[in-house]
Image (tube, rainbow, N blue to C red; front, top):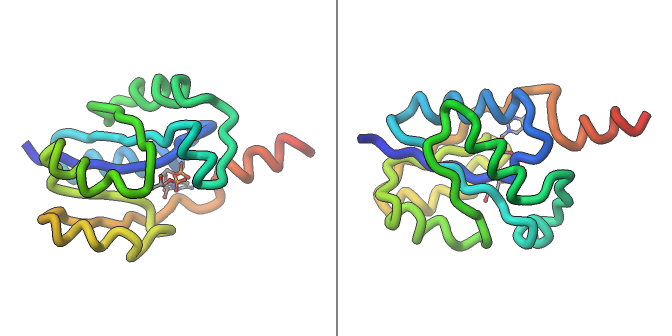
Length: 129
Ligand code: C2G
């Protein structure tokens, strides 16, 4: 059982997020998604439209996702990969290089290409027009 983990806010869920989760699941058999809490979003400087509980419920409804856990801080990844026996860490390549340190924990680190032309920020901007 190859276990994969990824992290994110996943606000205003869109096909870019789905593309990422679909490819992440294809790298193993079990996909864990750590969804940023509202409190951690504030630390990340992100304001979500949907609160954590709703973002969690949306991500849990995705066929590729097996488990959703809260992401509460920048530093929990090392604990998480051991606690959940993770084999692969995956995230979009906007984060390229930022999480290579997880390789020292025996985890394969994969940066996947972001889906172009779609972002939560862009959705919000266009809805404002
Ligand atoms: N993503 C993507 N293509 C897009 C938009 C997002 O592939 N057009 C990916 C991002 O690269 C990320 C995931 O979808 O892997 C979730 O995106 P965000 O919710 O923006 O996550 P982020 O705020 O980058 O949080 O500790 C890590 C952070 O929590 C990552």
